[in-house]
Length: 290
Image 1 (cartoon, rainbow, N blue to C red):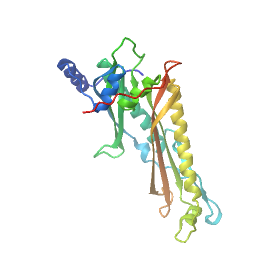
Image 2: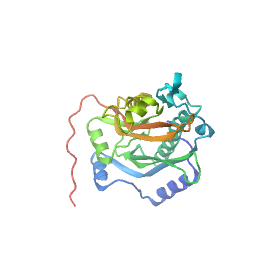
Image 3: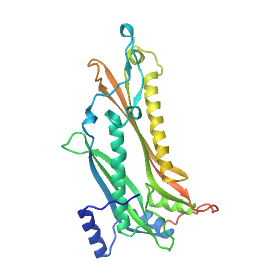
């Protein structure tokens, strides 16, 4: 990961921390004790942020998957952001998610390197609308930079969502975090006559095939992107931190009297690599009683 040049405000904040000779962190007492037990120490709280404009393409007309037929017998299929590409609609949105996440993570890693850290643990990534500006999103990554006390150092700054205790267990088990990875996809499907019949007031208890397809196809595409992002890091595997699936309804852009359903799936985790071939099972971490 190429480290970007830090903003002046970030450089000033890091300079004050170095001059004061103290460090800050978002670690709990248990996390701090777990890190110290395996030979790591915190060097400071670090962050990276960016505000991205989704662009005018985000508001463009999006294919809802409806395919017309004779006498109103048309049917719908699921259309995902991967099918739309990065030049319109939800394809633009997902492409922005990846680029903005990379920018925020790179700036956080640069702060870690500036403090002499080896990596960042307990990373929290938030994505939220930027107030007062439509089609703009703010991405923020916050974590605690840590450094190994001994002479062995990683080749590059690692990023991990793992807590201090989980990071300690991972190291004890002979594994090391490599990077945060993500997979995302957005799917849209028109509510055709089959969906309406399956969900009507007097419909029997049954599976709604169209909505099942929408969720399954969108989740499958997100998993594919997630595995590709993991392979990019060169890691041996990945520890998933969360799978988020959100569903919403919108007015169809082709027919004002019909509706579409939109599903957004995001998967986030930490890619890990084994650093020794033979190891013993991890022992329990010491619990400090206050």
